[in-house]
Amino acid sequence: MGLLTRDDRHIFALAAPAFAALISEPLMLLADTAIIGHLGTVQLAGLAVAATVLGTIVGLCIFLAYGSTAAVARHHGAGDERGALALGLSGIWLAVGLGVVLAASTALLAGPVTRGLASSPDVAEQAHTYLLISTLGLPAMLVVLAATGALRGVLDMRTPLIAMIAANSLNVVLNLGLVYGVDWGIGGAATGTVIAQWVAAVWLAGSVLRKARAAGSAVRPDAREILDSARNGVPLVIRTLTLRASLLIATAVAATQGDASLAAHQIAVTLVTLLSFSLDAIAIAGQALTGRSLGAADPVRTRQLTRRMIGWGVVSGVVAGLLLLAVHGVIPSLFSPDAQVQSALLPVLVVVAVIQPLSGVVFVLDGVLIGAGDGAFLAWAGLAVLVVYTPLALAVQRNDAGLTWLWVAYGGFIAARLVTLYARQRGDRWMVLGA
Image 1 (cartoon, rainbow, N blue to C red):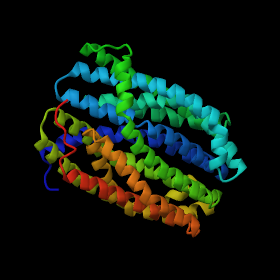
Image 2 (spheres, rainbow, N blue to C red):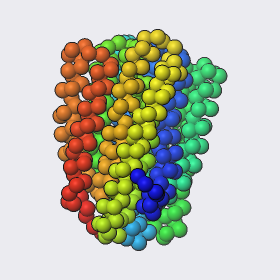
Image 3 (cartoon, rainbow, N blue to C red):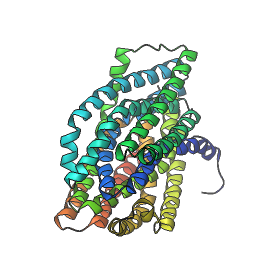
């Protein structure tokens, strides 16, 4: 890559704090996975089911973060600070309302959903306990998304960093105390995480509110802006739905292979989530910088930044893959004492490591196009990629090929995403200028 350029320094000024903040959420799940994994294989498999459901719900609402970042960054780049923060507040109000509705719906459906995804009745019982308690934190999770997106849009990466590190630390302390100190089992892990999520939500929403008041933005709910935020988020919901559908398919296939495979799959998913959020740091910088440069009507700088971020996406992916290969032999025993789980997980981690360089570029390109507001393309591209991935995953189930081949199919999913996103960025239809 040569010496760091001014663009590189600008990218890393945003990516470094974004990286630390991004990995805090998967670290919460990683802590839960490690703590629950030592309770037993059934509990770990139950977490796999509950985490898949929660991840799907929250993942479908990622537009609250991504949409806010892109919209707020455009107005910020155009010099409209008041309008930028008003949009950020509208996103938070939308998150509150949507979170309450989704929490109630999930609580009502928790039983049948967990029974449908679990590999055994015992696993279903553990999953139901974790999911039911976790619904109390759903509104907080969505507020964190919206507030974080608004802060990123005005290039404030420091506040989400501090808030999420504090929440993650609190989560670990509470979970250890509630799971082992008062013997609440998997329910204790869920309770600790819910408390930590609400601490982060109040912290981040309060920060956006203070900035909005300082800029003279209205803080009351604006129905029109809230509806606009919801409407503009539809393409990103579809895009995210295709990503989550692939994970649901993979979890369903892993469940047919038994409790040990499902438990190993949960550990792999958790590690992949951590790696994805780590690689996504440059993508988050891409969202903010792309929105800002397009808002300032500067296509030349947009293209320059995109090229540099693609290069750094390759580098970060290679580094992530090499690090995982270096430690993959010791990871299984950290998460489960079950020899079957460890044996199933070891080759999967090698496959995951090999995929990381492709993932690094995919996440960067995804972030750039989200920052450009190219949601409609991302929705259609996601549907096309899902069409490619589904028969690969089902072929693994049909041929009883095992967990490792299920993750090889995931490699095909990432490769298909790379083809569609790279082809799009080579053109200029996504570079719409102005606020």
